[in-house]
Image (cartoon, rainbow, N blue to C red):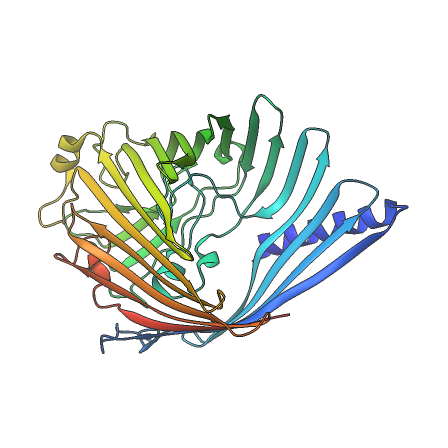
Length: 422
């Protein structure tokens, strides 16, 4: 929270300076929305504890979106701030989604502050998009924009006819927001641990995350090369005794990612290709149970409009674990074993109706390797330019309760989103 307020203060100072120095017109645009999200369990079961309720999410949210600009220089200030009341957790919080200063000079664009970064071409499948995500939002019915969370950093873009480049420096690490047993039924290999903690990297120069993307068009395809040096955003678990732990520490080991992506029109639709090598720098031999092994990841996707206002999209994604033998040797007896090869197939269907005021959609994840799935049907209706509503569901299942989707088999939910834009 303090870091977010510091960024907000920095951006406010920048905006004031720009306005004072400007001899031309400057202005501020204020927009926003009020959003209610209510997600209820459909299984009739609730986890133990004060947050284990029939209501999985009960949120009232107020968004303020402020944009300031000046004619003196090519600069703009943007702030997105959410005030959130959580009925389940019984608290109120301020969430600074974005707060940044944009400045353009010649072929260079600078963005300083809190921002949401998106790389890669996958549809809800991520390889070179290594930036933080909120998986609770995806699994509990918040609008899709809340899957991505912001990072505090500096982004520099260079544009030219030959090659474009984007450099992103992030001095403070932000992990993924993962579901916890306070509100979800989920697999926990260390459920017997008496204590837990989290070891977040210090905000030092040596821990600064660096991402570089080089991109341009080739033969009608948008092609990018990606390099990232930072950390795994989903935690590993370090224990004092793997066979009988009394204390478990969540850690975020070093990671480098090298990848490529391409997207363009082909075969009458849009073809997407992406791949990457995950270099787990903290344990390249694969002998440390707390550190994820290195991986190769790739995906192929295709999207096509079959008839007016109806679109279908499908993807195949896979990840291959390196040093699988070392992983098996270090796995304690009784622990659920991951597969060397894990794959996911997705299907997206979208139908627009009644002058596009209705949107019927369906998204499905299915893993052939782990035999588990997540189904997400939704119906959204735009009542007017300012009022909209959506209802949907999240349906989990799987052969085992230890796989990624299968562990949430008791967390099926139905939700409604009500939104008013102003």
